[in-house]
Length: 227
Image (cartoon, rainbow, N blue to C red; front, side, top):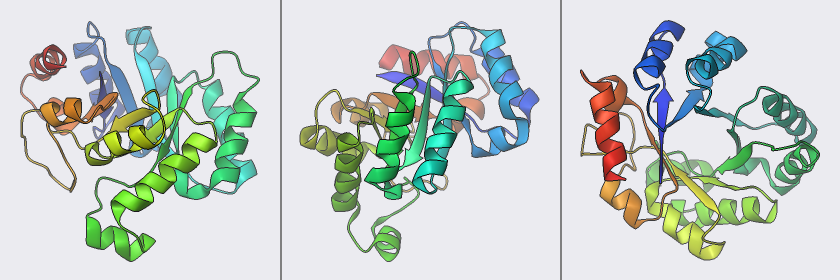
C-alpha cells in the first residue's frame, strides 16, 4: 500500500513548501483540479525538481467525448505524470480509446477510472445514478477493467469487491482516508488505515490530516510506518 499526499492547499507556494517538507519520504503527490487549473505544468515541474523520485498523480477526473478524452490522455502523458484518472461513466468506448492512444507511448502513466466519489452517500448517489453505490461502482470497475485500464478510484468499502470481480492486480486507489480517525470534513465514505489494509487498497489518499497538521512530516512518517 502506497501513500498519496493530496496537494490541495490554496497557493502553489504552500503546496511546494509541503512537498519540500516531505522530500525525503517515499510518497506519491496528488495534484488535483484546483491546483492544476491555478498552477499548471510549472507546478508539476517544480515538484519533480524538489525530488525527482516523487511520483505524481494528476487527479483531473477527465470526462468528455471519446476522441477528446484520448487527446487529453496523450497530453497528460506528455506532462511526465506517473498516474492520471478519467471518469468511468464516460463509457467503455472512451476508456478504450484512451488506452489505445497511450499504447504507443513508452512507459505510459497508470490510468485509473473514477467509480463513485467518496462525497456521495447512498441517497445522493441513487439520485444521480439510479443504482446503489456497490452495484454501480462494481459495473463501472468492470467496464474499466474490460477497457484495459490499470485500476479504479473508489472508496475503501468497494475495493475488495472490485478486486474480487476483476483481478487482485487491478489497482484500487482510495480517497477519503482519515488514518487515525480524524475529522471527516465533506467526505461521506471514509476509513482509517486498518480498514484500508483489510480491504486491499493499493493507494491511500490523505490530505487534510497531513497538511492541516502542526507536524506534517511526523504524521506522514507515522502513516508510512503503519502501512
